[in-house]
Amino acid sequence: MKTFFKLFIMLLVVTSCNTTQSIADSTQEAEIPEEDIVRLTSDALEYEIIIIEPGFNSWLSSRAQPEGYYSQSYMESRNWVMVQQWNSRVLQPIKYSPDLYQLQIDYRPGINYGFDLNYKLYNYFIYFQLTYNQRLSSMVPRI
Picture 1 (tube, rainbow, N blue to C red):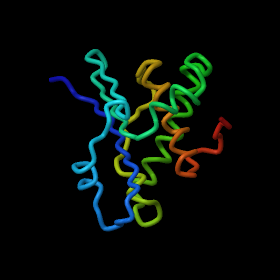
Picture 2 (cartoon, rainbow, N blue to C red):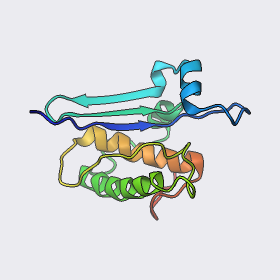
Picture 3 (cartoon, rainbow, N blue to C red):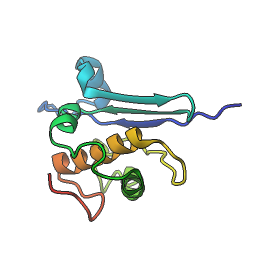
């Protein structure tokens, strides 16, 4: 039987002053523009990544380093470090905001997820760190 590997990153920016509103309610009420959803799928590798983050797609096309600037192996190693830090923070909701760190990421070293997934995941981590003033690793490129 095939095993399915799913990688979900769902983060929403809630700009409402109503702090008691849940993320689920915000998702249902707010219509998320299609340009703010990044989807990557592959039948061969059986993975899926969904990034829902307003502003990420425009940032990726205008401010991120172009594809090919970093090698795939560099991005894989950085992604692994940042995924470990991310997952650690998901498990500490008292110390780190559960609104920022909602779901764990199932990213395993030694699996070739391809350049496109690594590029977008790496750049999402950079975007996340810059946007929310977080540090997932000691190396945050200046952009």
